[in-house]
Image (tube, protein in one colour):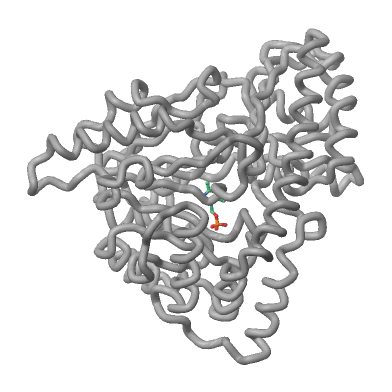
Length: 418
Ligand SMILES: Cc1ncc(COP(=O)(O)O)c(C=O)c1O
């Protein structure tokens, strides 16, 4: 049956293919450590108890009808306070939009800013910008980043692509790498955006910046989160932030996202989110509004979540560093934020005991799934070439014990490759 050109051209997710393979092996009774999904196992990482109680209470008080299109005022005010106290960002409630998780914010920002054929610049590896370009007919301009720079983009890499572009989409801490912008690199990129906009005539659409900071509360040790508007206040008129509670409260299924930016753009995004009906459920909004106001609850929860996630990431990182020290062709980058570790497994071209040559990172991944019972996601799923031998390991759905136990299995599996 004929469907739209857009529907025909939507690309499937490589992660779903990997999930299919894992499910097949699980059906055969095998136990695979699944480090592929950017999610939490809610039995290992439950949402904050006070948030859960608040949601139940809101349902018991029949908070079940349509919420306002831009979100409950009480929540927008709580978010405004949260941004001010945690990041020093000043956004009143009319510059904040609530939606059903943060994905509708990204999609509505694209729809509000980008016309079909417009250029959208984003560094790779990157999470889902390719799909939002497909959905809006935008022309994606991929900027390859390098492991030497923790797979974060530099101004020098981005500079050649900004002339005439409509949107620069950045994310920090970054999915898939768990690495972050340092102050200087982000400042230099901000200065490029400012210079580009100064060079444009008033009747031309400016270059906008989409800044996804959904992992900003999940940073480790001395790694500090930076944002463009704090570093360069004049970018406030051009920057739309994507943020929300999905990751910092391990609440991916609760669906409360918040975006903020210039009032006019937020108003356009509100209309788009409204037509999609992509609001956050009212009871969840009522509960999140109360929860965010209680700094002690939030701090206590974040401290534990960060400590547990960091312990898992560090254990995995140390495990890979030990393999590297023993001469294996692997590497990993120090975890800085989010729930991800960046791992190198450089075994393309090697042969399995059955004589199969591993042609690319996807083959290496499927080999590890079968032999080591561990599943990662190759960076090719995030827009790099499949010759890039780096992978994302997501620790939100595994216990520390699971992670400790997988390193010897990886060692054994890699030892069998010739
Ligand atoms: C960088 C980034 N932004 C946005 C999202 C979407 O989050 P949500 O579940 O709130 O839609 C994700 C989810 O994985 C993400 O990794």
